[in-house]
Image (cartoon, rainbow, N blue to C red; front, side, top):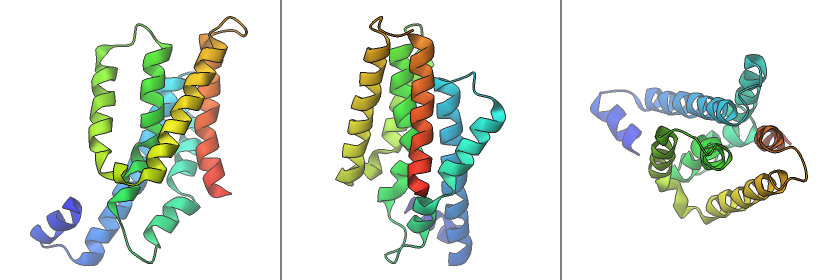
Length: 168
């Protein structure tokens, strides 16, 4: 609601504020997904990362959020931070020599995504996917399969499952 208030203070019309919020939501979702892929699977080429970002940012869920009959609610802000909420902790697990700034960035992402946590369905989804990804990490690093390279690829592929499942 801060952005709506800020738009009113700046003298913007309600439709301009709504357009700005929609633009911010889509662009931040795109950049969040793109950064998550860059963290987990740096070998993925730029075109594939961009395609994944577009699929994540523009799909039925995103368009449904803004076409919803109740209007915009702060619960959906988790959608913007969801890829980073998955990628940052996993990257800290995968890379034992991860720079300290990743831990700080993880904390900042948690702080900025806090307004959405009173939507318990999303919170449980985050925890279930964390458990799944950590389980994959443990499975691939036990010596049964080649370690970090496979874990990063699986993590990257699992991030592609999110926007594809949203389209279906």
